Amino acid sequence: WEATCRHELRCALGELATGLHGLRTRAKERGAPGGYDGAAWSLPPTYTIRYSQHEGELRVGGIFLRLFLKEPTYPLRNPKAFLEACMDRLLAECEHLVGLTSEDVDVVRATEDAAEKAVRAEIAAGGMGVKKAGGTRGEALVVRGEDVMTQVTHAIVCLLRVRASLCDHIAQLGYVSKVVSMLGKSAGKKPRHSIGVQTMRVIEALAQQPSVVKALNSANAVQTILRTMQPLHRDAGFALETLKAMATNDNSETHSVIDECIRRDAIPFLVSIVEKEDLTILVDAAAAKVHAIALLKLLENDTIHGGTAQAQLGAHGGTWEKYKHQKHDLFISRNDTRDRYLMDVDTGPTKLLADSAFNERMHKPP
Image (cartoon, rainbow, N blue to C red; front, side, top):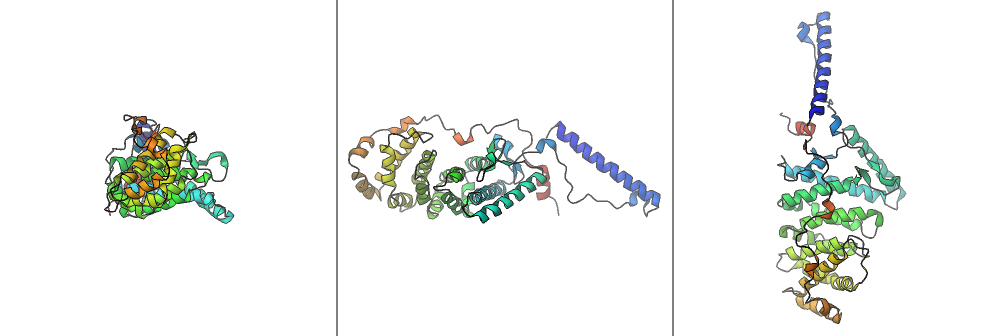
């Protein structure tokens, strides 16, 4: 909220006052009952004031995402509702991209129509204008140089980090299985790589809570994560970190995540990463190897399934013996806790976090 917004509000109110004065004057001249005060008038139900400073802003659940990302600790009026709105928007954006990259021409055409309709509705509501990057089929809708899916994921991850208890809320509402299912749809399809990255980020944030790991495992997250890493892609290191978080935070009596990793042949895959000399395709090859080795150690030292893991590792000869006693976590800086996906999202000063029009609708007295 700033001087420009105040000026635009005064102008809008002035126009309304001028119109009402003219209506009252004509009512008096006609000799209407009540005279000057007898004019029947009410604010049109669809009337809104469009502030130029708000044009082009991405708003979800009545919150300006760019400003929320500047101040994730801001005391939101209803953080649960905001999180649900962000999750719904993320899944909707993912579905659009899945449809746009489908091999079925009819599905592509229907998805394009639905996406264009959603864009027009958002622009009409004073939101951001979006366009297709490159103008080719399957490209993401972008604004300010970053696709909508990524911005929404930024907000979800920040919210889950600041308010960890909301992870359980996500699990209770059934979003966990939807996110894992969406991750599965990205497997092996390069045009859907962004879906894989953003859903993996959400899963990694949820995996920090032991109470949610059970829901992730029930949704076949381990199998899905392993499947999306084959063949290796540039962000496979982060997927390994997510899998490690699940294994570390699994407090089930049967150590179900460890068991699932072993049953899904994670050990041969992890050993292949450790043995691989050329990992230049990865964003951070060193971190990927560290996470792979850490996972293998978790499997080998597990009190329930460790014997099975050791037997499988023994089949790989001296490869594992060469690495198992080394302290590889030194390759990762203990002081660098930044999320590379959240870098440079801070743009411009904080002025107005909530969409006042949305809040007025949501909290209008009966």
